[in-house]
Image 1 (cartoon, one colour):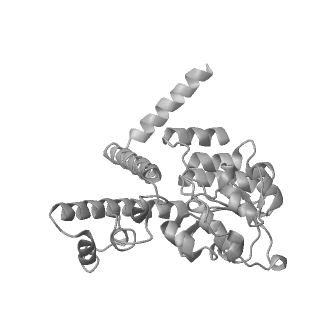
Image 2 (spheres, one colour; image 1 turned 135 degrees about the vertical axis):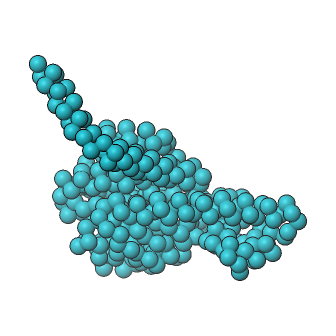
Length: 329
């Protein structure tokens, strides 16, 4: 299974990529208060731009954490705050029966779950594994099958809202998985998000996220082009943004995440584009959309050809049968 998933990831053109958030100046311990007795540890794998603030919000809600990241420096502030930091995803699975993963690509998720030191090497029966990475829905489904074989539960729960929403605890989670387990997942995800939506079976969370990111990419490109055009025509960017946001062109990219420096505070464009959702990851999500679009087009073409030639499928079956017989002989 792991080999086939790695092949799928390679074909998709995904590569290992991660940008890590700089540690906060203030000690994390100063902003956390917890009732140790009332909360059991939660494993968290991947504390980069998104995972870092998400993990902090779990801490603020009183959950002790078992932390792992492929970059040890990313774990330092959690270690300084008294959290446990371990050396592999398998070690996380050994110490926690509820684990959240937040990773850049399908390949990273596959390695974290099915790799030589992956979660599945030491996962406990009955564990709840929540993957908040944005990855291929088919990869989520395959991982769910492997997790189920180990007697554990897998749910895909990608997020929307960006780094700002991750920091404020206002993410939207799109959850795919067994409905009976949704309440258990919601308990944790509600600490990090203001919207936790059950979408259906495993993979539907990722499906919803792909659709959302397709629309986000279109609106962000449109916002960037519109702002650039206005500036070149002599408009003040802040004034133009104000007009767009009170007009029919208003969208999340214009009023919450404007791409032009100086228009608003607290967004990547105000910080030399540091800490935002990188174009590499958006391109990765776009590849997934193209893959499923091309697959659908192929299926429609085959269906159309079959309707035009009702005997087409019979001919194919007959040819396949003849081929099998010749092989056997």
